[in-house]
Length: 558
Ligand code: AMP
Image (cartoon, rainbow, N blue to C red; front, side):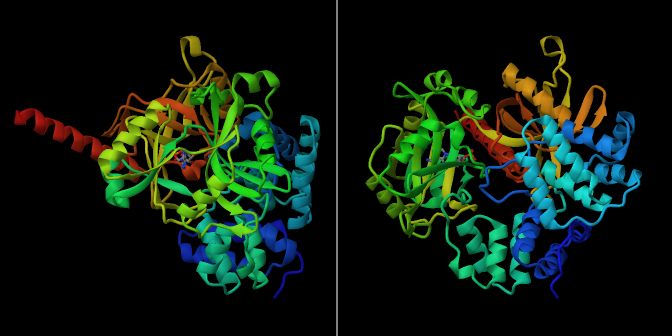
């Protein structure tokens, strides 16, 4: 039976049930039942909200509502004071529950909000310019929801859905809802990138017609880390392609009919940050979708990532900054070339297409060599480091491009300095020079099976003063419990940390500790789902202790 209009309260009921069960099958059953009853715009919105996002993939709009602004409006709408709100935070540590509790405290006579009305409200919020207009739009929205719907408004605005619905389950639910084979759904997701669009195609029985679309970013193909050349060759075979691993910002470039848009790893539109790349791509003679990296490059040399970093905090750079830190686009893949979709074509053919595209001063191709055996991989690794790049990517020349998948067709090798991507879960006020800023952070990795976050270390060095100031602001915004010296925060900030070694230790709940951890960089482009897992930590610890044993063996053998 088709529901007349879907409301956010319907969605909330389903989502609460999904959150309440740990059974994946049950989650899929609940979501698919919900989706099956939707059609048209409701189906698109229902699917999109189930993935925890507010706008379509590649849509440049953002809500830009900070945690502090949200809490101010919440106090106003719910008629509670800061102390009362802090008390509720201590009870829940979850923005959704806090919002629900606050809204329940005021007398409300809200009509159920339809999904389409919510979409219109989000559009109005994104369009509102200036803090006042945004606050007004948010106030109007929060005043017009029931407490249950309000909980999900808060979750969607903060990007913290947390109902245990990973994308794979939403994908499965789409298949179940519309009787489509899982493989067909997953293929459509790879091709169009947007689950909401895929749901609409599945409902119409048109999954076969899924195709990449200009200016809708596809997910990025991901690489699996390996410890050394030996492991790489063991996994991939003796004959591999190696490319330099550039230390910049991953970027998908769409160029069609003179229009160019750039998308970051998290599928955000970043065109305005790199106007010189966009201008160069506009001059290309072909319509293409490229995969590559934006890299700071000056006077024929790669600049360190820190230089590029100065451009990342800005929406758009001024002329001085563009002159100081010029960037190029290093392309290593072409996914669409004119009318040809090349995802299934072997890398060998895609590379040939890339080479046929013609050279451009600001759009260059990744350094590629075909090598045989581990010793050659090692040599190429040293060459790549000599070119000031981070390490090597190893690729299978016969492999297709699999968007969003981390497979064994691409391996990454970045010895000698290993890094882990971790998420910040707490912070402490600094001392001395760092007084007044939250400079000491506690971070966690993810348990593979359960997605639970387990702490693995603390770090306080590596960021610039400007970054520490920015992070302090954000940490205050996302605080879930303030214990004076230490605050717990929502797991949002992803850091890449470098360290000298990993050891088994009972200092942290993960069972491991890092020796000399330091923050290598703030990964704005990654979210909590992208961080490293406990099994990788375990593997790093195992390799390290194996190396040590070998060294001991060698020492004693003399
Ligand atoms: P990581 O960020 O450590 O997970 O390493 C994977 C990243 O390496 C990709 O997301 C790209 O941003 C980057 N990268 C640099 N050079 C290459 C290359 N030649 N091929 C693919 N990825 C590359």
